[in-house]
Image (cartoon, rainbow, N blue to C red; front, top):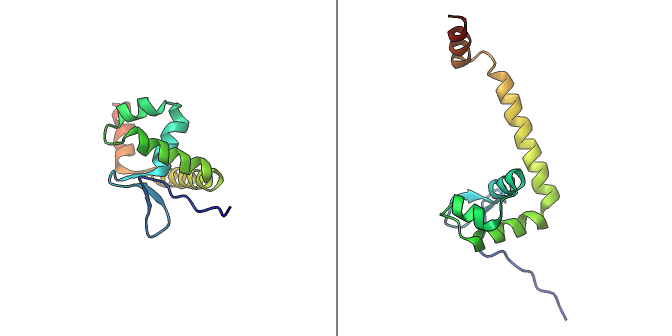
Length: 104
């Protein structure tokens, strides 16, 4: 018997190869990150995000688990980039105002 490739229902890849939930404007990595952070059930996630059906969430999580190493590396890279940008904004006008407000 010859194996045939299986696609993920409800998902599409953008021009950069990133998986998205079709019609929901949500990246698979966002669903996976939320799941990993909160360990919510699929039903809880569908309640919190009513524009996502349980089948969309299941499909996104299946993709995540099938591509876990790559997606976790992307998450780590994104987090490192966020922290770098945060450090660069150390003296932003808002931070200065907030620091000065505490001195008054």
